[in-house]
Length: 122
Image 1 (cartoon, rainbow, N blue to C red):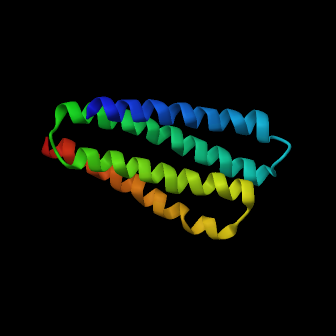
Image 2: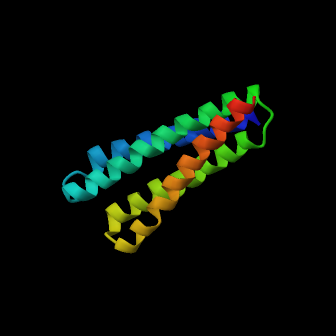
Image 3: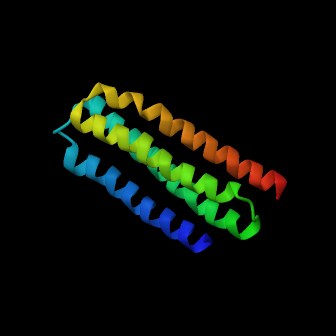
């Protein structure tokens, strides 16, 4: 499973970098400064947690705890909910999407806590 987490992290990293580049080159001048800032925040957290999946891949080689894959799934859910809602909010200005963003943030926090607990118990 560690190879799958590593591959997922790499794919999500590539997508996060592409999203950041798209904002810098394709969205500049088309979105307001605030919308571009939202997009960049989404891309930044997207990239951070793609790196987090690489940590999950490493952890999967060290500790056989159910908390490790839980962390991976929480990071993926966080990318979808947090970054995804911010990407959409930047493009559409649909304010209700902002209510989804904190759920993604909670997924990120829970994922890091799961990873820490797996290491602690390791």
